[in-house]
Each structure stands twice: as C-alpha cells, then as structure tokens.
Image (tube, rainbow over all chains, first blue to last red; front, top):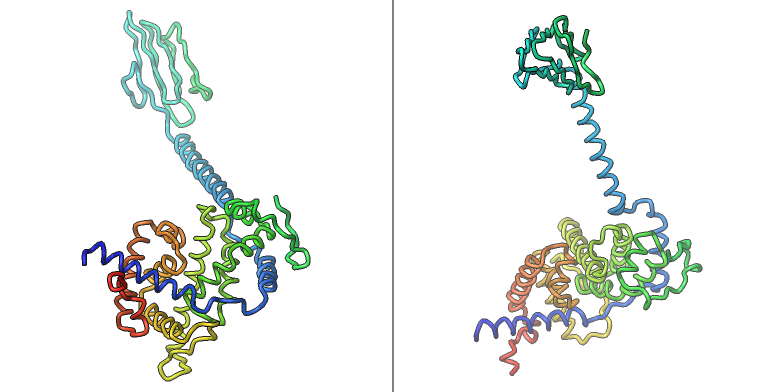
Length: 159
Length: 210
C-alpha cells in the first residue's frame, strides 16, 4: 500500500468514526428550546455589565495612554532644560565661563546662546560675557559701538 | 440598530434571519442586541448541541454547556476578529467548554468514584442499534486517551466536518498547527481504536472494502 493510499484509507476511517460520533444518538433538548433561549436571555440581561470592552474602547485607551506618556516625558525634558545653564559659542566655537569676545577689525563675531539668541558683534567691537545661568546671561558691551541681536521668545537677559 | 427589547420571552420578536449574514448578526450582538443573539441561537443551537454531544455523548450537562457557549459568545462578541466565521467560533467555544468539563470531571472522579472502575454508565441514547452504541462507547474510551488539542481537532474535523482552516479559527491557532493537530488526533484515534474490537468495522481500510 502506498503512503497516499494509506493516508486515504486513514481519512476514510476517521470520517467513519466522525460519522459515528455525529449520528449515533442524535441530541435533543432535555427541556424546551424556547425555555432554554429565555434562560440565556435572562442570563445575558444579568451579565450585560460584564461584557468585554470592544476594540474601539481599547484603541482610545491606548491613544490616551500614549498621549499621557508623551506629556509626562515632554514635561520632564522641559524641566530638565529649564535647570541647565545657558551655553554659548563664538562663531561656532564653544566657550565657557566669563569670556571676552573681541572681533577683528575686518570680521564680525556671532555670539550664539543655547536658547537660540544670537548677538552680532560688529568688526573691531568687544564684548564680555560676565556670567550665564539657567535664567539668562549677563553681558558687558561697553566697547561695542553697535550690537544687534536675534532674540528668541525667552531672550537671553543682558545688561 | 435592531432594537433592544427586555429579556422576556413575551417580547422576543421574530428576527428576519435570512436577511442578515453571520457578520451582521455578530456586529448587532456586539452592540448588545438581544434579538440578534436570539437569531444566532436559533441558527446555531442545533450545531452547538451536536458538537457538545460529539464530545460528551448524551450528558446531563449539555444544556448548561450550551448556555455557556452562547453566553461566552455574547460577552466576547466585540472581540471576534472574523465575524463571518461565527459557526467555527461557536464550535471552538463548545470544544473548549467540553474539554474543561472533562478535565473537571477527571479531577473530581479521582476522589469520588461511583463505580468500581470509575467509569460512569452512558446516559440515554436515542434510537441507536445496540452495536452502534457499543462502538460509540468504545470510541469515547479511545477519545479520552487522546491529548486535548488533537482530540478537539479530530472531533471538529471529522465529526463536525470543519475544514482545517475552520478548525484553526475555532481553536484560535494557526492553520499549520491545526493541520498538525488533526493529523496527530487521527493517528492517535486510529492507533488506539485498533485495540477496540467494537471499532473494527469502522477501521477497515478502503482497499479491504474493495
């Protein structure tokens, strides 16, 4: 007997056994079918509050959770940035602490702070950054005949 | 929306069943529609009872298990991923309910035995010839010795005539796993069945028939 014919005969035998299960002693309602339906509907009426929430409800819960998480992370990041002192660079070169900026006679210097504020120091002018903190920076522009700045919403505090 | 009558028999309205597909009924039940649930009941209660009968035989727990199947469907209707496969889904709940019932009984009768062997006599079987009843009893003994998943797959495939894909949906498993379970169930049932003289007539190969 080939494997194929053996498989066929096994299918045939299994189907015969399935038919034996299906057809021998066909079931009938122990009680009236209508009364069983009534029993189901009574049970359903009692258990309506136990139903599993649907996909739409779960989707909105997920969206709300993601929004809340993003909000919390954003808040942490905002507070973290608030607590960090302003940094600055002169023509792209990072500087630290009290620093004197002296522009060449032919070349201006752009003093850029980490909050986005940029001071344009004219050629031959001098400027001193006295200090910088999380809330602003103190600049001394006594030797700067002209100083222009591009300010952000929360500009660097200068004096 | 199909309306939400109270759960009283007097207010159950005849549902226009032919106009609604299984998917539409599932959607309505998911909305809490009791009339749609009654329509699902009328459409499939016979199949569900048949599936439970295939698993347990004539059994006093059948009515309660049928209730469990439809109640389970009502509670989880919103989660059906393939509403058009409602019949398979109901068969799956029925198969799992039967498996749970058998497990519970096995634990219970380990401590409490009414007969010497622990086997209980079959309930009343309607209008079956005596040899068929012997064969059926032998087949149930065989099925009790088959692991749960292959047993459910065998019953769904060969007694309820579900396709392998429908068996997969019913049992919530992949097509490949359903095919393996069907094959394993068939092989186990046939191997164990060869030890039951009452099943010999069913196990004759086609070539022997010819």
